[in-house]
Length: 127
Image 1 (spheres, rainbow, N blue to C red):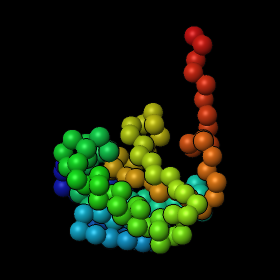
Image 2: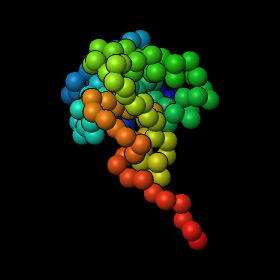
Image 3: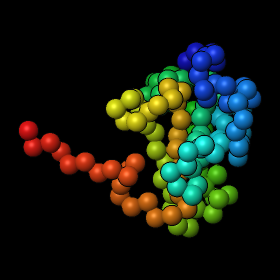
C-alpha cells in the first residue's frame, strides 16, 4: 500500500478533489456511482488507501476486501437489489479491463445481467 497518489483518479475522489456521487463511506472505504454506468445501478467501492488492484489488497490487507464486500452488500440492499440479485466484480490488470489502477469493486444490478461479463463472451481459441 502507498499513500494517496497525486495522479490517481480514485485517490482524488477519496480526497474530495473530484466530484462524485458518494452513496456510502466508512473509515476504510468509499462507494460512489460510476460516471459511465453499465447497469441501472453501477457503484464503485474503493479503499481509501491506495492499492493497485484487488490482488494487492488481498496480500497486504485482506480484511479490507471484507469491508469492500460488506459495503457493496449494504448499498445493494439500499438500492433494492437483494431480492432480484446483483453482481460484484473486480477487474485485476489491463487484460481484465482494469483502467484505473486503484483497487475497486463494481456493484452492478437493477436489470437481468445474464451470464455475460462486460457484454462479451469469448470462446477459447482453437489454435
